Amino acid sequence: MSDEADDVMRVLTEQIEARFGMSVPSLRRAVAFAPHASPAAVEVVRWHGLLATAQSALERAEDALVTVLDTVPGDLSEDHDRIMHFANRVNESVQIRDGRASVLTFLLDPDAPGKDGPAAWRGAVPAHRRGKPALPTTTPAAPAAPSAPVRRGAGR
Image 1 (cartoon, rainbow, N blue to C red):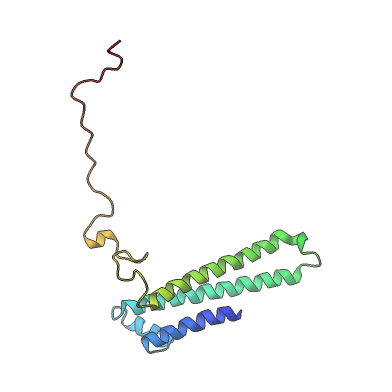
Image 2 (tube, rainbow, N blue to C red):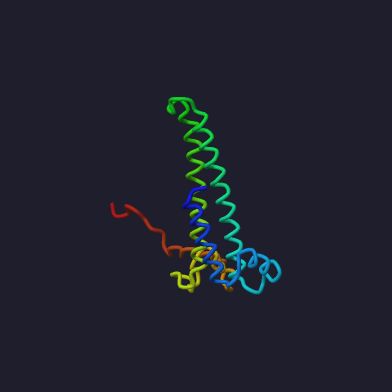
């Protein structure tokens, strides 16, 4: 595991513990016991679990890449496609982990821009829950029919 990965998990775990005043395992137990007590805590625990899962997947992808690089004899260009496959898996895993870390950072920041708006982020309340339909529910009005037929070239 890289130092950067340790830092991502460590920093976000420390922020969670500071915000809620308890360790992540204790917060996880509290959320399991009373899930309706704090919707914010439920979301933070959920995304921390998703982040931990993504971090584990990243570590496995890194290990697989290292294994491939250790088994390739001599010239790396001979096994380029296989090496690139594993390198791409590492890149994808990093992107997933970083995306989940960004969501968790957003959830932990009470002053994040757009948090108070009606549709601040993907988890915002859908329109149908606000009493409005998501799409128009009436058929559009038909255009008015012309009263007299239009004659083209009648003046010739």
